[in-house]
Amino acid sequence: MRAFAITRYKGPLQEVQVPEPAVGERDVLVQVQAAGLNQLDEKIRTGEFRQILPYALPLVLGHDLAGTVLAVGAKVRGFAPGDAVYARPGKDRIGTFAQRIAVAEADLAPKPASITVEEAGSLPLVALTAWQALVERGNVGPGNKVLIHAGAGGVGSIAIQLAKHLGATVATTASAKNADFVRELGADVVIDYRSQDFEELLDGYDLVLDSVGGENLEKSLRVLRPGGKAIGISGPPDPAFAREAGLNPLLRVAIAVLSARIRRQARKLGVSYEFLFMHASGDQLRQITALVDGGELRPVVGRVFPFDQTPQALDALVHGGVRGKIVISIA
Image 1 (spheres, rainbow, N blue to C red):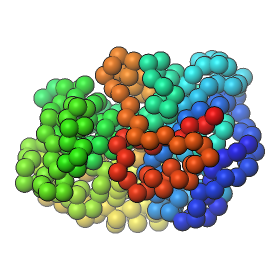
Image 2: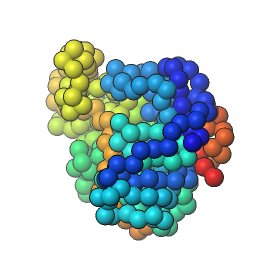
Image 3: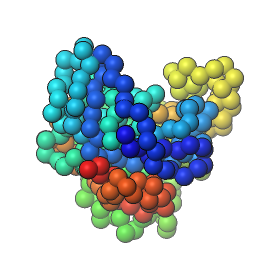
Image 4: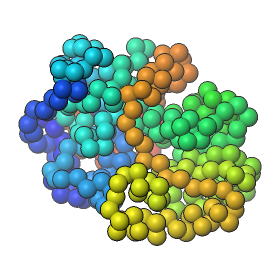
C-alpha cells in the first residue's frame, strides 16, 4: 500500500510501501479519499513534539481523513461498507497520508452530506480543536468576547464561525489582505497584525484562542478580563496536559518548568492559561456534521494537491500564506 512517511526527524516526507492496516474488532477500514494537512504534521516531522509524542520511525504522517468504509470489525455496529465518513484518528493511530487506514469506530463520524470529500477531509482536526477550545473548555456563550488569533488559518477560520454560532463577539488577527475574508466568516473586530498591536486595542475579553505562542501568548493574557482564560494550541504544554497524557515523572517536571513563566504571569493578572492538545472524538464530529449541514459552519480549503504531491503540499503548509486548509486528494 502506498503512503508518505518520514524515516528520520527533520528528514523529507517520502513515498513508501507499507503493510495493509490491521483491522481490530472495533475498527473501521477506510479508503482515504482526502486528507488535510496540519501544522502538527510539520511539528512531528521536525521532532518538535518528539518528547510528548514518541513515535517509532518510519512514521506515516496525516491526522485528517475523509473517505469510504471498506470493511468493519466484528463488534462495529455504527458503520457499514460504502458509508461516507470522516475522522481525526487517535494520536496513537495517525497515518492518513496513505491509501487506506483502520480507525477506531469511536473516532469516526458520518461525512457531512452538503460538502465535498476534500472539504470534509480538511475539517476534523481543526474543527475538533475549535470545539474543544470554545465549547468543552471555554464554555463560550452569548455575550462573551473571544479573541481568535490567525483568523485566516485552518483553526482560526473554523473557530471564528463556531464562536459566532455560540453567540460571542469575535475579534481576530489577520493580514490586511485577509481582513474582508475573516469578516465574511463572522469576525466583528479585525486587527492587522502587521500594523496594529492587539494589546493596545482590546480589553476585557473572556477567552483567547492562541495558535502563535511566545510573545503573542504573553500579550494575550493582558487583554483578558479578571477570571478570563487563554487557551494555547502551540504551547507551552502545562502540567495538566502532562498528567492527562500519562507522561513519565521526569517529563512532567520538564513540562512544568517550560510553562512556569506563562502560568506565573497569568496568576499575577488574575487569569488562567491552559494548553490544548486536541483529542479524537466521533461524537463531537457528529455535532460538527450537524452544524455544517445546517449551514452554520463552512470548511475553508485554500489548495488541493494530488496524492503524488504530498511532499510539495507539506512544503506549501510550511511556507504559509494559504487561507484555511491544504488538502491532498487521493484517487
